[in-house]
Every structure is written in structure tokens, then in C-alpha cells.
Amino acid sequence: MKHVARKVNTMLITWEGWLYLREREHEERSETGKPFSEKSIARFKRNFDSYAKNGWKQIMEYDFGGCIGSPKNAWKEHRWTHWSINQMIDMLDAKGLPHKESEPIDVIDVYF
Image (cartoon, rainbow, N blue to C red; front, top):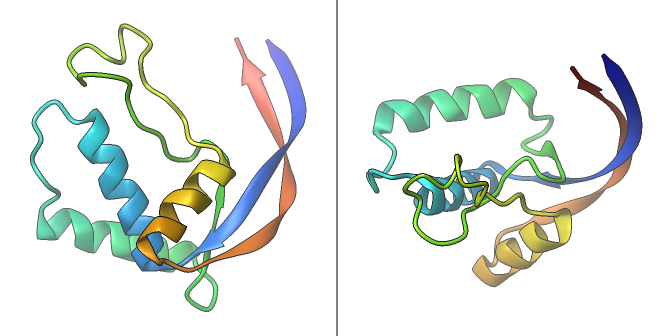
């Protein structure tokens, strides 16, 4: 087992921004193309609220991502992508959704 410590960029986003990124990720990666159910969105909202402070949740670089090409077999074919903080900021800005800068955090990756 190998442990690797590193710094990861972060930012703060609102529920609307979080849901937009989650839906965009799902749209790019989902083989079914079905939107989230109201039940799923309610579950996401409860989860968001449990981690958010004053309506803002901290996310890390690569928490969300998309897919290159068709989602069919994309995971097996290594075509899933992960979005950097700058890419997510650009997406949020294009939609007029708010975000705030946040300090990088230390994380430890564990490899087996």
C-alpha cells in the first residue's frame, strides 16, 4: 500500500451550482440519458445541506467530470474525464451561477 500526500484546489458553490454540475456530469456519462428523479434530487439536496455551511459547499478539483464521446463503455475504455476547478468555474460562469474561492486542502491518496 502506498500513501501520497498532495494539495488539491477547492471552491465553494451553492446548491444550484452543485446540482448543475451533477446534472451535466450525469448527462455526459449516463448511458440511459434519463434525468434524475425528484426523489434523487431530494436525496442530493439533503446530502448537500448536511455538508454545506451557510448555503455554500466546498468541492474539490475532480469531484465532477464528464465523458469523451458516447457514454457506452466509456468507463471500461477510460474515456471518463475529471473537471479541474478552472473548468468548473468556466461552466458556472457560463450559466451565471455563483461560486467563491476557497483555500487548497491537503489530501492523502491511498494506492493498493
